[in-house]
Structures are given as C-alpha cells and as structure tokens.
Image (cartoon, rainbow, N blue to C red; front, top):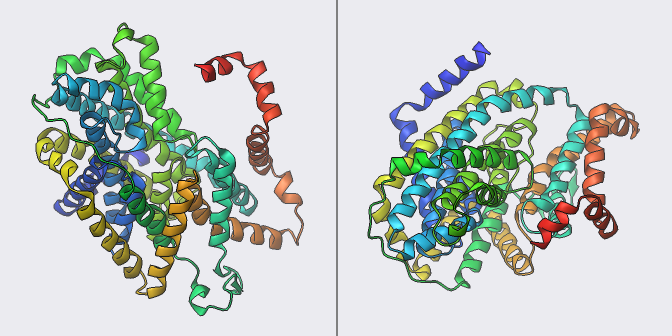
Length: 504
C-alpha cells in the first residue's frame, strides 16, 4: 500500500513542471475546441493528436491525449447547451435541461453547473482509477497465451456494444479490423499475408493512418453533410453558485459512482453513464416535473455521469487491455504506438505508468475547471467558424499525420482508402470503433493463438481447460447467444422489469 502511495506521489510530482503543465493545458484546450464543434468527436481528437505527438516520449504524449479526451467530452456540453446539439454523443443527455436554461437567458448558469458536474465526475473517477487499476492488473498477471487469446476475442465480442444498438454490425466491423490487422508479414516467421503482390503492403496497414482515416477523414466527409444551426448568446455569469452546487451533492456522488461503474463494463460507452445518471437523478429528485424544462439536478447528473465514466473506461483499458469505449480504444492504440502495452503485463513492464495516468487525469480535471470558468466567451467564437474553412485544415492535419510517422506515401493512400470506406459504412449504420478495436487487438490475438498452439504441440485442449480460459470462453459464448431472438424473449419473460424499461 505504502509503495503504491509513494509511486502515486512521484507521479504527481512528475507533472508539476512547466513543460508537463503546458502539455496538459494545450491538450485540454485542443480537446475543448474539438468538443465545442458539433460532429467532431473525442475519437477524432485523440487520433489526430496521436499523429502530432508520435515523436514525443510516452508520458508526455499520453498526458496530452488524456487531457484532450477529458477536454473533448467537457467541451461537448457547450454546443449541447447553446445549440441543443451535443458536441459528442456523451453530451446528448445535457441537451434537454441545458438548452432549456439557455433559452431562459441562463446559459452562463448552465455552463457553470456543467463545469461543476464535470469536475466532480472526473474527481470520483480518478479516485477509483487509483484504487482499482493496480488490483485488477495484479489479478490479470496470471494470464498466459491461452488467456490472452480469449481476452483479445472478448474485446472483439464486446465491440458490438461499444456504439450502436446492433451488435451484429459491431462484430462484423470487429472481424474486419482483425482481418486488416493480418495484412503484411506475420509476427513469428515474417511471411507475407494478404499483400496481393504489392511490396508496400508487406509492412501492413499502419495503425496511425488507419485511425486517422477511420476517425478523421470520414468525420470530415460526414460533418460536411450535416446542417448547422445558430448559437444562443451568452448573457449571464458562468461562475457556479456554490450553494447551488452543494445542494445537489447527493446527485453528484450518485452520478459519479454510476459513471465509473458503467465505464468498467466494456462496450457501454460514456453516453450510457450520462443517461443512467440522468435517469437515476429523475427517480430520486424532488423536482421531477422540472426535468426537460431546465432542471439543475438533471444537468448536474448528466455531466457528472459522462465525465466520471472516462476514468472508468481507462481502468479495464490499462489493467486488461480491453478498452471500454471508442475514445479509450484509440487511446490504447496510441499507448501501443508509444511502446506501452496495456494489459496484464503492464504492472511488470511499466508499473509506474498506471500512477502516471492517474496524475494525468487529475491534471486534466483541473485544466477543464480553469478553461471552463475563464475562457468561456472566447471559446464561443469556435462555434461560429464556418465548416468550409475548418474542414480543409483538419484534412491537411490528417495527411500530415498519416505521412509523418513513417514518411511513406503509401500511408496517405491507406488513410484515404480507410476513410472513404469508413464514410460509406457509417452512412449504412456501421460504427468505426469496433473496426479500430479489432485492428488493435488483431496482433495480440494472432500471436497468442499461434504461441499457444506451439506450446501445446498443436492441441486446442489448453484453450478450453484452464480456469480463466473457461471463464472468458463462457462469457463470450453467453454474449453471442443472448443476441438470438428466442433467448432474448426468454430473458424478457424471466426479467419483466427489463421489458417494462424497454417499453418506456
């Protein structure tokens, strides 16, 4: 325990220097700017910044990405309140009450409440991140090649639930990501696979061009096809009334706990934390009739719930190597690019890194408080930037990022190809997060399967007889079987409250 506290103290001291503070502030500001613009997501922000931070050391790069992650979800509340358009999917629950307050001339008050809720949510998540991640990582140290195979397959299985309501589409995209990850030379014998005679493909589809194409170029094409709306003017003060914030302390704590718990469940997403917190607040509130009409209770719950889920998603990402949401999947890919492999071996190879991430998230918590209270009015101008001006700039960054990592023109072609494919797939209702998760987990699944077969002399028996392997296999099988309509009807009959919730 004392060793952990000592490492946590060292992590906090390591970020208390001018360079780290500047990186943290810059990352959070970039995230807030992206979050303010409707249609641009945290995944896009992290993917673009990954390309710009690839030459930095791992700690500074991850510091920027974590701060941008937190900043993007916080910045999304601006457009939710002022435009009634969520900046990210996680801010959708803030639209009803936040925009209702803005229409009453209380936009500043709504932003102040959202800032207070975001700060409280990240604080709850940071405490859980520091407490639970090392424990979960130590449990996962008993994993071998067989368990790593099932863990990677479990990640692809839960990818069906990362975004959207159709798990089959998610699984298809996850399998597509696994296939793309096999392109190039294999990891054991350097034999070319699926290169079709093109020498450029022997190195495979690099992770950064794929990320930028899936979340950058496709986002540009999607955003240009979305109509814009006018901005509500800000008239009152944005500084929160502390008496008002303290009045809803029970809502803040409850929503913080719900957000962390939903974050721990892989595939749930930040928006689930927001909506579940909003629903719980409505159940326990004494002002149920105010929800949807400008409820402070509802706005506080929504923003606390979505922000506390960020550290919740990082916990399984670091301890198990299974990201819980689309942005955390891209964050995990960035860690791998910088030489840090999340998962059970993290406590052996980089034991200090977990505590460093706790310190980074804490710094992000304070940066959004500073920007949220003192840079509100300047940030409103971001909402008025014409998209025909903004999108070419982002496209230029996409090209620079794809080319800069390896200085290969082929990477730009790969980025454009992935982006075009992603754009058309998104229009058909397919999400890109499962694709990226399959791309990230593909090498782990491939190497673990082949290494396990080598250790067992070609026998599949150890994959199904070891205790943890049996557990993971059972969870995967149950997840797939529960999508069969007949079994879904049986579950609805056995658990009538689920049927009633779905009906409502």
